[in-house]
Length: 249
Ligand code: PGA
Image (tube, rainbow, N blue to C red):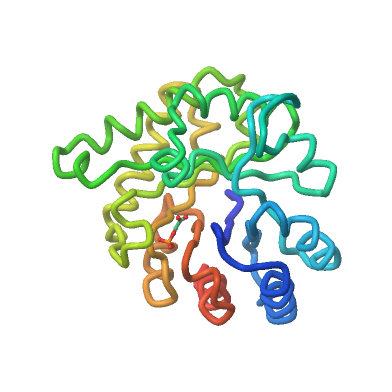
């Protein structure tokens, strides 16, 4: 049985008070579920979030980190800093980081290596842009993103990896990949990992879908055999919606 995960990526939303309020509501109303539930607040609110959730099963996740262990990197945050406040999982490679902050496949390979070395769990995001899909290059793009960041890892490192397929054209647009499109890509991802490593790794890695997951489409997406949960943006900021999505898994 693969681990199921529903993770909320809050992006640059919610100040300290709003963070605490939303977490209070979520932890009080968290439904019984077999899935791991995670939230990724902004850096400045991570410590408040870990304190607020100290008695909760909801895990606090960071949205990013730097590849260096420490040093002259103004404005950046290291793996050790995150670990020291009780954050042991990090989102890497989100399409907004790739597009707006110039994060390349090569840079992400370094971040992944650092996170692995520091015993962090990684939610590794990737996905094609609309032009790639229109040109029928989506499989090729996804394979390149996976292979650049993950295929030189030691097989044991896969225990620390969660994948999140997020077609860029579906993020924050209200446009979702159809359940069939999500399933097709998730199956392709497993096949690609099986080819690069082995079937056992491919079958045990959790693969999330992300991109405009909402209460009304979550059930159908999550019911696809190779979809193990979701990375949720906008809908994770609304307690009722996030809870409905957790209930859909
Ligand atoms: P969205 O964002 O659910 O708002 O489309 C998903 C994401 O960016 O992870």
